[in-house]
Length: 93
Image (cartoon, rainbow, N blue to C red; front, side, top):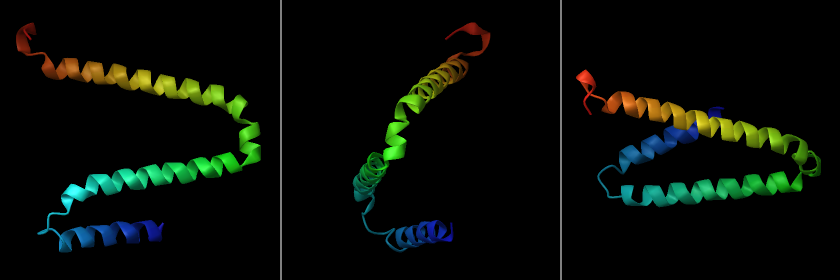
């Protein structure tokens, strides 16, 4: 936990020290590469775990159902919030 906080604070400090340079254009690219690398390593570790792979059919249906319900719930809430924020007083849009 402290390691994570250390790297977070180191990143904040680095960003503060380099705030006058135009490094923000690289931030999106570096973040994208880091996320893709983490996903790849995570996939490799899942693929190498034979016990997890053998139990995938049992948990796969539950995971798919939870993912679909989560997406559906997010879309419903986003639609309700969008409707509430875009509807003016008096019912006129």
